[in-house]
Image (tube, rainbow, N blue to C red; front, top):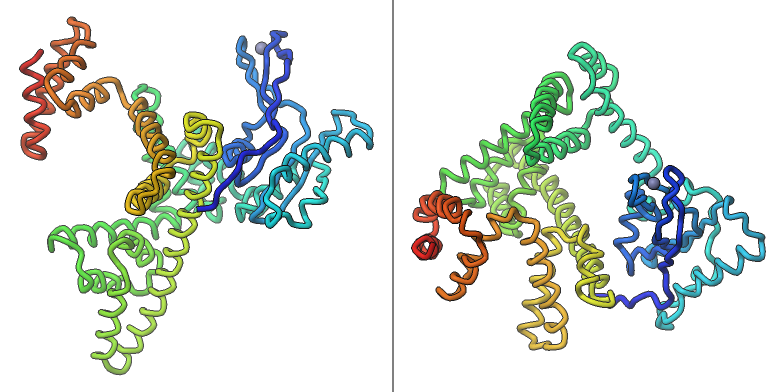
Length: 451
Ligand SMILES: [Zn+2]
């Protein structure tokens, strides 16, 4: 794990601004320095267009704050700075300010990490070029950004258009409709599904119809539909056999030979279970085969190895990113602040990583590290808990009670008029728990008897 260290100089400034719309004066935060490794949450905000944007507390108007901005990425050896013209700084003042910001990056840097590029920040004239440089550290080119903008615009036009408009838009823009476009659509659908508002339900139906149209009208859609059919067949077969075996896995990979996207999706599903043995089984089959069949299987092995390497690479990237996030959390002044600032980066791979680090610290009896990691883990869990609906939080609190007294305490917080509703909720949960989780069922019964 790479140890990050906090930026020594204050990189955050408080400023007083006046809302251009309603005139309300209010304080705003300005960040002048973004460090990809040490303040990844600020980089996320920068990429999301939310950095140095202040929202008026009175009318809600968002204002972009003019500020010099320095970006540092040690991995890409990039140190760039942009000073907006509107600040009206003299050459001399500009140089002084840039020197001050660059010093904040190098102050406290261990000597072995000091490199030549740190001596001279590169000044970028326009914010657009500045952002292109920042995006390039993520492997995103200006062409990719343009394409994504075009796709978002197309999505907007499709959603608001009638049936005939949709059909002609799809025909004219088929080159924009790829897997990424379907991914965008899927994300929207998932968001709408969780939104109980009637308007969201209408939108959901609209988008589902649009998706069906795209499945039949576009090449990418047809491919995706085939993929879904092949994958659900595979899942069904795994279920029927009572688990994934290498032989079964291989049979389905062979059956989908020639369709690399299906094979890739299958490998992704089975990735955790694959290990190298799949290839041992395949090699056995190659040795047993002859002529054209042997050649076909040999080619398959080559392609599968490529996919496998890609998946390993992906997993490694996720782990690296998780490592960076944990370093950033550890470098924050307090665990609370660290978790709060990096909440947007805490995902499933991160939790895997954190759990693995905890296990390693436990087995190596590294008490110092454990004392740091445990509060972080607890804080993330409680933050996740707070996002759950109150009734789910209540049930979680009840079933995780260790004794009757604790249960009484939880129940004591429920207003008497809600008792009936809680009892009803527990009753319907009891039915499911009886079949799936007897221990939980017993807890629920106990709680019900106490109400
Ligand atoms: Zn305002």
